[in-house]
Length: 221
DNA sequence: ACCCAGGGTCATA
DNA sequence: TATGACCATGGG
Image (cartoon, rainbow, N blue to C red; front, side):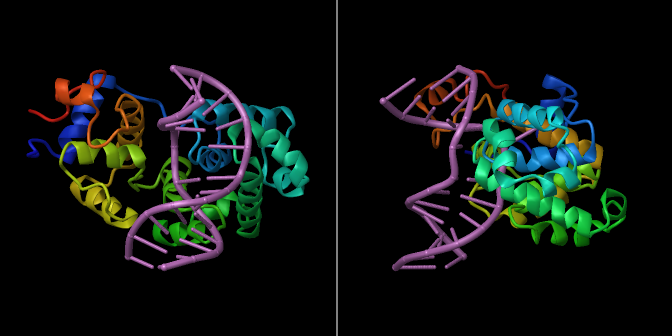
């Protein structure tokens, strides 16, 4: 299929169709960081419950999470799935955060250096690191997720099997480095991505409609 | 009863 | 370098 669109055009179309998304849900940078770990391969509704448990237990702070017993932390995280692994990941992230001198200090670290530091924390991979950079620290970093691959490979703009860094570079080169815009774009991609079925290359219904029925048509203009 | 969700790590070839 | 198993709950 021929690409009759482009990365910036997709953004403008998604924004025109869906408007502002008001992301990331979370009242503080730290809550956003916690959410970024908890939402790994997990529906956000489940993450909200886990975060609500932490808040109710007054445990939504680096110190409280570091001090919590793994069993207790796992109990609070249970609704978000993978609770044993995520308990360890949150502890690792909080230990790192405290060792760095807290959010105030961390927020002054240059983006590339901060990215490398985040990737050094056990349980923080490329996407989680970029979620944190973009949504918690307002850095102009483009987040690549499964929906990004799905949507843009269907549009013929990427293959979809590229490595994470390769795709991130491609998107960042195609756009102005505007954190607010990257924020909206990724949010729109996730919201729109939910309307697109996962079946490859296309399910029968999508073939007949020449696109996924419940999604807007991003392929033309 | 399946499939999927706002991934990452580790072992294996 | 590139797949596959594993982690685990909750909604459709």
